[in-house]
Image (cartoon, rainbow, N blue to C red; front, top):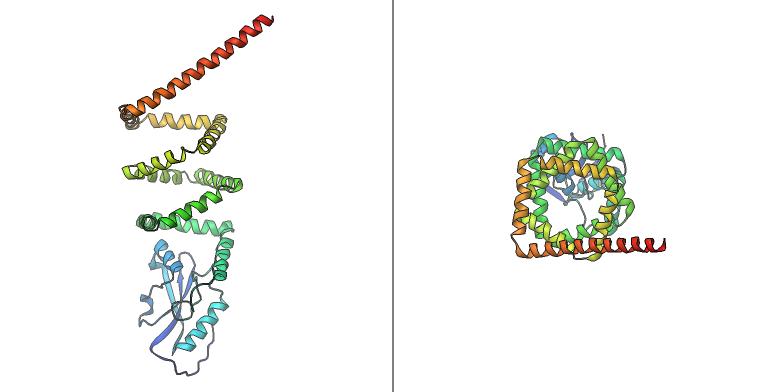
Length: 322
């Protein structure tokens, strides 16, 4: 990569030497255009959010830095940086981590316009439409998490903290996911992708299961999930929808066998049996739970008796007709 630049003297002199650099993450191949005034330019990590995410996921030690332009003139620096930003299309290109043009004042002349945001979003979506790009990104992330488990823990902790500090953000994300899953095609697409991932990489399912088990060791997490489920099941439509989905699923012999095998395997473990037994005992020690179970049981038996009565009446009718 070579760019010839001719400078002219200007009055907007900077005491520090302004350096325009390209940082490249050798592990994932992503580049980042940035500025520094530090004497040792290698010590400047880069401040862009997209670039910082890459460093956090894949490590700072895999970065190579190349200085491509230096000057004491602020206007010359801005002119060159903006020209190269446009030339390489660093905002939209999948090869660059920049989310704004580099112009020497933190990366932007002002707030990002809605048009620029839309362009960036479209560029990222277009990039992820390519299966190779998705696989490349996924493989790099999985590798980084395997080599540095603390990265995943850090990200998870940061995400939870973010949701706690910004409940509105969590609410918006939840609403966007729900809206997306209202589309049957999207649900099928997601389900197929998940099933395929589990078949190709059984360890993914095991990792998820272990993470979920660890999460449910926390009483607060269990209560939060239980409260959410109870609230959801207060809606008759939700109950009906879940019931219909379960019935449809269990019409498939493979699904029934799969569930049966999983339950049998689970109950082969004495710890699991004891855990289930303790839960049942605890539940039945609660008078409200016993009363509720009794009512449900009475309803079931009543329905069975009614069905048998109807069946008996039908038999009698048939006999009289003969």
